[in-house]
Length: 196
Image (tube, rainbow, N blue to C red; front, side, top):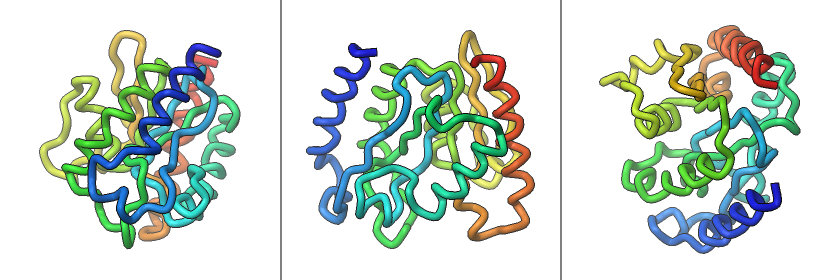
């Protein structure tokens, strides 16, 4: 555990001083991944929100509140997981990320994955799902709209399971999707129990 923590400390020094893309000019704080460095389950959200940018802490805004409610429903303990973002800086006006921003930031995510070595990964939303499936060499849908069909599906290879889910913030835009999101987290919870 100490070795992992030292690796994280070194990585996070790099991330905090990163100026690889335009987002460093508008961020207040870099938002780092948090949680159990020995976690079997790792969540990958898209990017920090305004509250996260202000405080430099992950998932403390409205989407975070929903996320932790969903964790409770899935009977997953907060202390057992690790949560990170695909992008470590706030996207101004909550705009969509640009692909060059993702390209410049995704290696930090891959370093986190290599340190933690989770057994179960749940990317939240389109961008995180696409990057994670590509990284682990799973086929990805050609069209963005087709990602809705793979949320809640299980991708498995060797000792790794990936379960993409919609981002909890989806509920703010489409309340009718709440039940589907709950169901996805419940599936995740059942599979997680086999590993815990």
